[in-house]
Length: 160
Image (cartoon, rainbow, N blue to C red):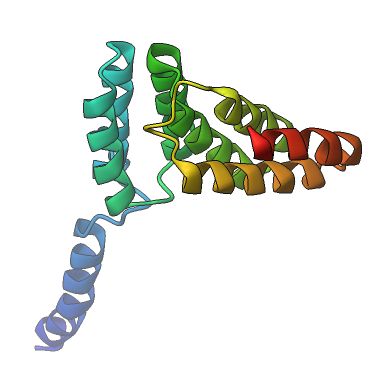
């Protein structure tokens, strides 16, 4: 009787250990998240210069996990492909904003300058966006302490 009693007392312990071992933890089971899969699809679309599909995949990935590994780099790649295909001031401004957020101030400065210097892009880079690009250019110049260029080119770009 003692053997049966001790066996039945041990059963809950073994059962709970079985449940503990049977439930996979996220740390032990490597799997591609939905966001990572969407980022991979976006990269594939960019490989084929399909920027609209890439943007849709990245938007979905961002909604699922805005901190997913590789999402920022893929957004940068999206802007660069769009610039290569269309050379739009709005896309240059988007890239500049992203680079500014990543503390890549010199690169951001170049993109804002190029966005403001595109003359035939009035429909996509309206007056409000041009003003914002100018302000962001000033911010990126200040971040790299480029005071000489800040004053001299700032006025010229604001008037263009």
